[in-house]
Image (cartoon, rainbow, N blue to C red; front, top):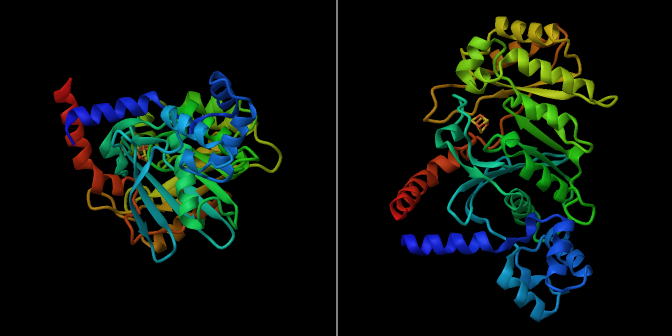
Length: 380
Ligand code: SF4
């Protein structure tokens, strides 16, 4: 696409309002600013979230001339689905694209009792976890609240049909591309919009936010009144190894991270726990000694209301790591349990459809982002 056209398109997108990312209050302000009665905001909100409509012209309880007027000023959808992969186990992976060509990966994971959608909070990621493909893209940009909400709407519509009920209820995990706590405000706004009982009605208790360890934001998150569940991605129990696997550890080392985790633990309600995630990398962090080190770390910081999610690594050609053997995974789990730590193994899903986070974006988009970026650089 010529540079001028790309710039024009981006300018128009920046000017029009993405209504899917507006809170009820913002919608009221928007419609009253147009001289419309407040109840129009409720009609728009329900159309976008309860009925999951992605085209303003289809919100037919609004008069036709109002729909045309809105169409000039606002939009209900900005993401386009570039590709969609269906696994033999029912997992669906989506590569979406923002209007400025940034990749957004989202995954639908069905299980017998509930469905889970894993969404992205950023396009690319600025952190440089050594076992992660998304890291290779760097940060492309933060996603807007609307782009976060829209991922869920796109997936639900694809799986169940536009506006159709979701039979199992839906859990959300912010474990796709990006570090959610580096896009904190947009994330929290999106979660607020999605929790509305006349909308998607996905309450915070059904949401888990996973951080690589942005310590000040863990503390801020702890103060939220209606907050989702927390998962902290650990993957190593020594600073030396974690510095290598997750360089964010050089900024906030294990002592800082565990102390924030302890403060978070103190705010849990009765019966609640939180999670540490541990990606198991064959021969790197999966020995019996390292399981003992992990249990010691939790004990040292008196962390008792936690569980460990052991995540077998999803291999990808561009990464230098391989998954632990199933026997080693079991040994690691049993070692933790023998030391009094609850540990669960996450079943790998969708391994036949580019399961590693960032794999779709790296596979299909990288070339075009790089050429877009070069075009823009040339245009400036
Ligand atoms: S693992 Fe998560 S935080 Fe780390 S680079 Fe990948 S997307 Fe970013």
